[in-house]
Length: 271
Image (cartoon, rainbow, N blue to C red; front, side, top):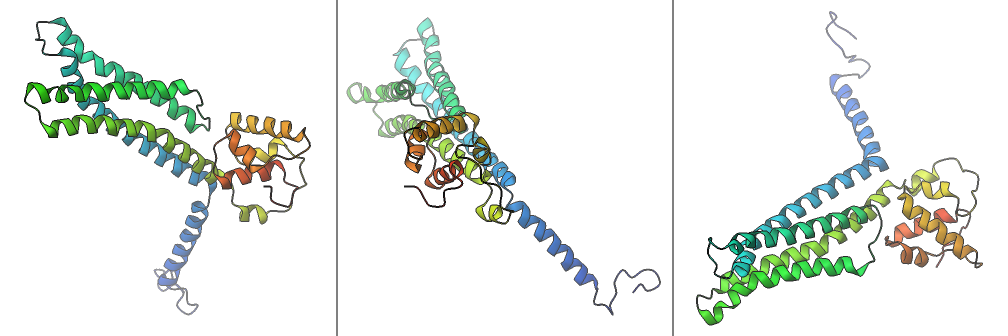
């Protein structure tokens, strides 16, 4: 009850300030739990983490390429002085290779982040050629000093280590993008328990785009899966998880969800 118009609690009914505060915390917790299980919010968090990881990988990669610039310049200049135009042009060699590599990795990241694998071997060959050339040009000035004198093992290790780390970062970045993409797709898929709590919907025919639409796959990936499923169905069998994983690189759980979406009326697992 109110006392002198100032009290907001009813002690006799047990509605004290502490009870009110706990009720507010309970309501807040219930909302937080709902948001924590929300597929869209989970997808947003994963995408934000993916961008953060990618950004820092880019920063360290650029720093590594920047360090190797001096070694590459020493290799190309080969003792020339500032009066020689080649000495100045030598500063452009590593930035040129780094620029090509950065653009190539940007292309890889954008494509893989959208669920499309790059199967053309020339992309990998170009990337490894650029990194291999950087490694050779960075270490050669130190190796040649084994004969001419002034050799420093520490400088050789660093000169070799930095390009190697850059090379490994360049190889790992597409892997990170692929797994983060798979995680994003999985997080965007409503939980099975949520689906079970909904009223049973009318059975949809196999390969109905609406069933795949619920998984929020990239349009190109979904179209490729639908075409593959129709092609296999024409041979008299249903698409399997292995068929899906041969077409697109997704985890086993995601492949099973896609297979189930393609055949929602099939109650047994495919192998």
